[in-house]
Amino acid sequence: MRLDEVLSATSGIYFEGTLIDALQTPYQLIEVFDTPSLGKLMRIDGANMTSEGDEFFYHESLVHPAAITHPAPRSVLIIGGGDGGSSEEVLKHPSVERVVLVELDQGVIDMAKKHLSAIHRNVFADPKLDLRIMDGETFVRTTKAQFDLIYLDLTDPAGPASALYTPSFYAELKRALAPGGALVLHIGSPFSHSDRVRSSLAHLQAVYARVTPYFVQIPTYGSTWGFVVAAESLDPRELTAVDVNRRLQGRGIADRQFYNAEIHHAMMALPEYVKNMIA
Image (cartoon, rainbow, N blue to C red; front, side, top):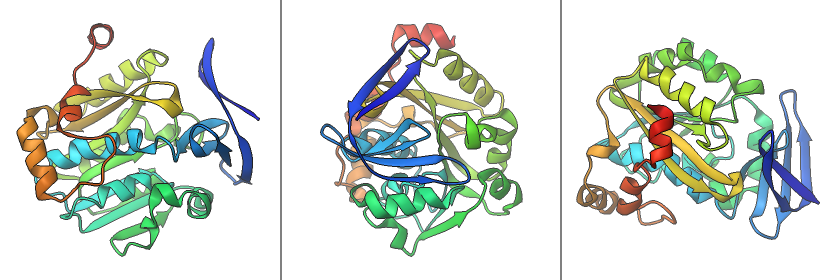
């Protein structure tokens, strides 16, 4: 079966795969395919979400730049991330005492538990993980807790996740950050989604003092993919390669396939077309 991934109105990529399970929930259609090139691949409403073959490109890039920059993150909030991959990466940092994972759709959790153990590595059984099945916007609006790191590990800004990509929500998230904390999210492809990248950065810059974009090539998405760290003081560019290596070694984070000290800085080196696009 041909699995098309639409990048824009005029471009896309495809993978070959065999459907092994599907679940229609009140929110979305979740499918898991077995593919020759990526192993098990989860798709939501026809869009690639994560795969066994390259999940480390995305999850390590989302989690570690901000987490390694923070001197000792203890409390972490993840909104979305029902496949468990981001939680698994966060919990590699030994100072983390609690991860609150807020996932709207129980179906994503169920399908991940059933099929994606190579990605989440049974993180759902970790006593540090506090799973909440609810709307992320409601959680943030009502919580009195503050978090050292907040990750938005969401589907694209359409459908159920659309309300979580707004300036007003970014301001609510700022209230939920502890002093010295940071918000991290993905912002799409600078090549295929240039308007989204520009608007996301502008909205974040209106709320946060320091906004640091960075970019990674992700095979499942067929493109260079953008991420951003938004904070009042934390800036991942301020760590030297020596600092990053020292913290990785000190925290015992050896189980990595993508992220290292050289990658930490390389992903934040912006090509000229991106600099011009976001100027």
